Length: 194
Image 1: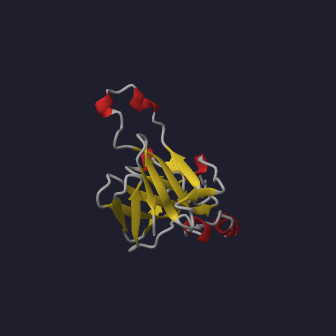
Image 2 (image 1 turned 60 degrees about the vertical axis):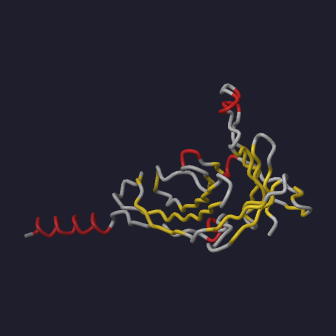
């Protein structure tokens, strides 16, 4: 009987000392601030050649996903991710902005926030760029502008007909205003006017 009590107390101590699962999957206000749009907005852009185009912003999508964990506690952690997308009427420029909250025990959930035109593997990660101040776009001065640029050197080795004439290589973005301008590598620029 004495041995049974000792075994019971040992098991009780082991269970009560087990590492607790502290999951914190929810996006913070700071993380959500990267999504400059709520959904439903219509952005109007004018090109340097005098053309106009609009982008319709789709609704925000927020989801909770399981993630890989490095925790020895065997907890099943989750991460919350959100995105918003925009589709242009004329230009071949559809984009998504992604944010996520990585639980401290999660791994393999990606790098946030980022803007992508295709998929996360081709994302332009804001952490790879430094914000710039005093950028004038459409006669308005902006601060904390992220000038997201894509490497265009691979286009040079291609035939002229395939050198990315329709590819965007620079996007001007602020957390407060979203996309301010996007430039094609051959010189065409689209500036937001609303």
